[in-house]
Length: 314
Ligand code: ADP
View (cartoon, protein in one colour):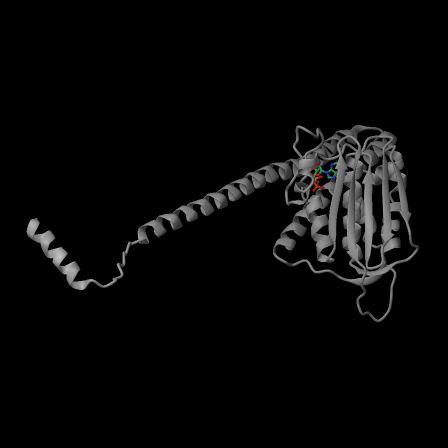
């Protein structure tokens, strides 16, 4: 021991020069542990997200099944009643037949709407939906669809008003999609507004943009749900609304169709006061040979699908 320290002292004295001491420490293990920790965190996040999504899908399947089953049950029951009515005297039978045929038609519309919406969601997800853009007078597109619903709204005890700051504004839109957007917002407005309520639709020309507003005096939406409602399959908690289930895809389609037009949709709402949905559409034109008015061939069917009871009330 002594001889070793003597020797090292001797060596030190011999050198008497500054020297660098390199210390190497193998961090590989720590780094690997840190990377594993990060991976675990990321995977836990992904797992939570996918569990959340699975929960939504399960809820969605249960809601959609309910939405499919309800009209189907009604149609089935109507067929059974019609079968029983065979023994009625002629006039009675014809009255019953008309009544039950209307019920069957309404419920076929409900089914068609749901199935069309589901098909659109899957087309959107796979990028198959393309816009058929034409230069159209957006004021008349929105006004026509709104005014065709006035008698129906009145029959529900709800007043419907249309307002605009301009007579004509030509912009490039896919009129079918715009009609779907407005019908969807209006059908929600009716669904969540009680008798003596008001629904207001407005088109505002702001130069580079056109703003379409659909406002109601309905039950409103809780603040923490305002952004969620545009997500696929999203619905406001059932404990809050004691209405039929719905599919939670209407506003997802609205948002997607608006975004396909490079626009955006926003919402303001106050519980028990009402909701206001605003759509911004960029005012631009597409090159086309001639300007045609939008055809309203599909409109009656679209209205029938969004408002299944419409043709039996007016
Ligand atoms: P759903 O088929 O369930 O109506 P939507 O995507 O159209 O699906 O709407 C999602 C949810 O947003 C609805 O379930 C409802 O809770 C809420 N909502 C939408 N519009 C309104 C409105 N005008 N007033 C109150 N709540 C609304």
